[in-house]
Figure 1: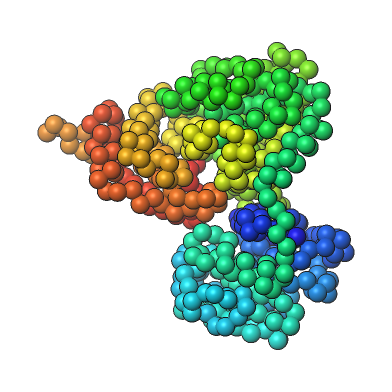
Figure 2: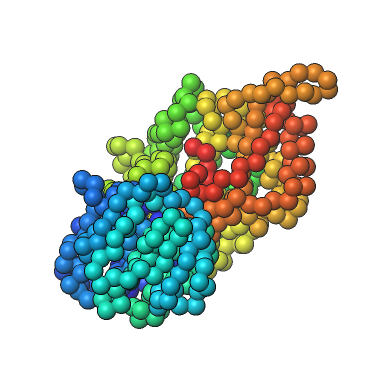
Length: 506
């Protein structure tokens, strides 16, 4: 197995995820774990993650120095690269300019880069840099702006890279990880999702024996897979609730009915909470406040439903790991990107939370869904956030703006489906911007909203590239929107990667 030190970087768990994808068991640990505790885990390798800190910051996470006495191969990534240099008596300095995005890497001979070309496309995200490698370390890669982009100590089997091999933007990053795991650390293949699925159900049966569970269904992939796992464990003691928030798209209720019928959920209740939520959101423009207010109503409603059912102790949720990462729920050293309503729980919540998927990524969830024999058409649905269209309307949420966005979303999604593009992209959405621009329609001046269309390609939803949708399709979507949706006179297409942007706007 492999131990991954979580220093608070956005991709700490993504590293763990990629190691598992290569078939190796991996465990995320906190920086304050002792060398003795690491030894008990008996890992074949250690990986240091990235971090929002600089290695010389006060309070920056540093591992127990005795880690280096264990004789275990180490791979440092980004902050981990700098940390390895810093703790092995090299020098780390603030960069004159930040290196962010795709870069060309110039490679020297090293077992870490076996099978790669002399020049490779990699992805950087850092401000500091290693300005002097430690004694007995050799530089094995550089870029035009970073002379020590990777280094090695062959004798101790220490390797480090300034770039991120775990993200999809690094073309042959998985080969780098594979070289380290199998050629250098001699790790064993011991991880597969069939065993994980069986383990989750076994644990649920043990933890929930004889208990009623209330499951918050959204109609999306995550809550469907989570609910199906819980149903395997508790059967008819599962009670599903779907909250109609008024922040849904036109087709969400219909899709939910199809899902429930196919999955065979017996106990389902749809609760209409539209008026209450819109009232609560009136006048709110701050995205974090929106999320918190929605979460408050959401969980209050679920607790009321639990009381009506009676003797319910547990609340099931479809939380997956990216939700926890962005809510900084995985490390005290992580920066909070945004609150997810199913992660940032309100104080005083009496129900115990059950999250069968909280350590898995979207593609892993879909594989488990397939193992559960959930129809593929449900597993291919694009993610839709718990707060719904409220976070796709920048600024105040009103009935008029919701209606505009529903129409825009339906046109965009329907055209992607008509052109057989929907299942080729990971997530597509429309956003209403809180600004108006001048336009001309029928020889008359208009002053209407801008909508932004966004579509991304990704496997893990931690990094993403914008979808290269054909111009002709975008042109047709734009034409339909401005002609069919009253209140919109301008359409833009978002071509920003994640990072620096998140997939959703709020």
